[in-house]
Structures are given as structure tokens and as C-alpha cells.
Amino acid sequence: MGSGRFARRAALRATLAGTAAAPLGAPAAAAAAVAGAAQEEPRVAAALGAAAAGGLAVRSRRGAPSPGPARTVAARVAAGAAIGVLTRFVWPVAPEEPARVAPQRTWRDADPSVGGDGVAIVVNPGAGTGAIAPAPDPATALRLALPAAEVVELAEGEDLAEVLDELAAGGCRALGVAGGDGSINTAAGVALRHGLPLVVVPAGTLNHLARDLGVETVEDAVAAVRRGEVAEIDVGRIAGRPFLNTASFGSYVELVDAREALEHRIGKWPALAVALVRVLRRSAPIEVALDGDPRRLWLVFVGNCRYQPEGMAPTWRERLDDGRLDVRVVDAGHPFSRTRLALAAATGTLRRSRVFETWAAPALHVRSGNGPLRLARDGETFDGDDEFDIAKPGDRLAVFTPRNSLAEDHWPG
Image (cartoon, rainbow, N blue to C red; front, side, top):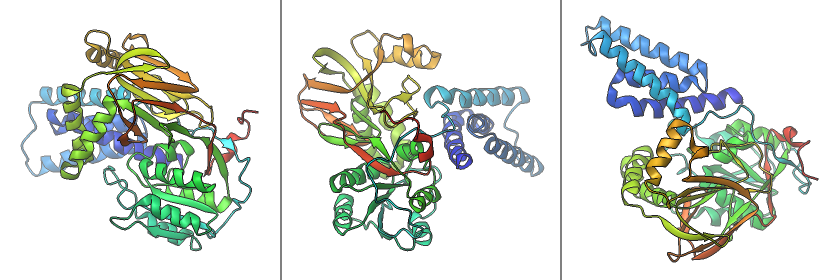
């Protein structure tokens, strides 16, 4: 399981690093891709290096023009390699082990089911359209592996929550979804309302929750169902709505809205780059009071449980049951705050920067001085009020995971 996980992360990091170095030419892009991939999975880096060397040899035999003087090419390769290494500052290398989760305490009917009897799973074919390396068709894989399960493909125009509600009301013993974090968030809300455990099938672009659960592939999800391994994880709520990974308001919400307006025309990753430039140029700070403390902020990030590392690129969680919120803010009250933030992030001094703060809390009360705010939860945006809470009211979500054995010594109490 781990090798597949890091191979996918290596491929994604290589693509992002290679894209960043592309303006310097093909040799720089290739070097960036190899250096980026090497931080996640050396075997993927070796394969990329061999492919790049093979391509160069073929070009040479065919008499293709040289990319430039040897000294210039060497300088570009070095610059590309540096870009690949520097990706760790914006996307840290994740640990090999998934997060710890609370062992099963309440759900006694999640018995092993080799064929998936009593399990209903909705496959969202629209999820993961922005993935660098999309997964094979999950609906076919699930039907072959769990022939007794009810596997439904979401049709164009159908509402995911409504389809899940119908299946839950139909008497299934476990509810599942194959999709990204937004789809999983929707399914979690339905599962919580009906008191059902959730089968998480990773089929999105980044699959944050599935990765932290140790569910890296469709095969992992199938294995968990067959063994009946169920654990409980924290559920956060922002303005009463559940979130499993993160909630946010401020510039990040503007970024998501701007990206979604463009991605259907130019693709997810180019849309993200264009949206980032636009938001950095046009966004304005927000005036809010956090637990009664007046603040002027660019961004507020709230994680469900503590995220690592403690910078502006929170990537993984060591636990999914710690009862805390991970709060991170970018302060707009200092001159050149965004420039200072970028410099601190690039130089590894973010924890000492005055424009960035992070702390853990059980809850956060927010009152806006700018009227109702746009909010985000698990990457999905919505209209909020001018006053709301972000908290963990105590409800937990039961989820299938193949790594439940890691949790047994970590249940609080």
C-alpha cells in the first residue's frame, strides 16, 4: 500500500516541479521532475531519469538540434534540480504511516463482508477530473471485488446527497462514496444523519482524508469492507456544516471560487495558477473578531485535528481523533504582510514571522465586520453569516479503514 501511495505522490510532485521549471527549457524541466520525484519515491525518480536520458539519446541519434552550449545546459539542469528540491517548502514530504484513529466503539454491525453485502456505494464520475494520473474506473473495480454491494454511478444532473439519502433510507448497513474530498464530505453528512458507517473510496484529485486513513486505492477500501474494520474520526463543523479535513475563510475562498470559474475552460491546475495571480492582485483583508479579539486578516485556515508541518503547507495529520482544531491565520495588520509571508515560507523562518500564527483550540467563534462571509469546507465554498462558530460538538463519523490496528493504544479514555 505504501509504495503505491508514494508512487502517486512522486508522479504528482514531478509534474508540478517540471511545470514550474518548464520556462527554463526541457533539460531543466526534466531535472526538476526527477529531483521532485526523488523526495517521495526514488524508484519513480530513477524511471523518470532513465526516460529523460533515453529521450536525449534518441534526439542525438536523429540529429536533433542541441539545447544549447554544454555550460548553459548544465546551469539549466542545476536550476531545474533546485526547483524540484524546493517543492518541499510548499508541499512537504509526508510520513509513511497514515494517521492514528479511534478504534471502533459504537458500530457493532459492521461485520466482515467478503462480497459487500449490505453496502451501498455511489461513484461520482465527475470527481478527480483534475488529477494528474486519474485512477482506473472505480465502478467496475468495485462491482468485480464486491459483487453483493450496490454500486451506483451518479448520472449527470443528479444530486449526490439525494442519491445517497435514498440508498441510506433503503436499509443498507454501510454507505460509501467513490470521489474526492468534496464528495466524501457530502457522503459523511448523509452517513451521520442516518447513523451509518462510511466507506471511503479514493477517486479524487488529492484524496486528503483517504490518504490519512491509509485508504490509498480501491483495493484498500475493498479490503476494509471485507474485514469489517471500522474506526471513528472527529467531525468538525463550520456554521453548523460538517467538515472532515479543513474549513477556511478569507483569501482561500476567493481562490477556490476563482479557480472553479476557470477550470472547465482551461483545466484545474492552469486555473489554479491564474486564480492565484488574480487573488493576490485583487483580494482585500477581512475584519473579524476571533473569540472576541478584533483582527485584520488575509486568511483563516482551520483543520480538523492538528496538521503537520506547522507552516503554510499543512499536508498530513498524525491523528484523526485528537478533539482539537488546528487554527492558522495570516495577519494583514503588518506592512507588506503577504511579501513577508512568502519570504518567510521560502527561507524556512515562518514560525518566527509576525504575519503568521498557529494554535490549537477546541472551538472558534467568528464575528465579521464585513458582513456575511463566504466560507469553505473540504474545498467546497458556500455563503455564510456574519457570525458563526467553528467547533467539534462531539459527533464522530465511523469509517472503514484497513489500518485500524494502529489505533488500539490511542483511544482517549
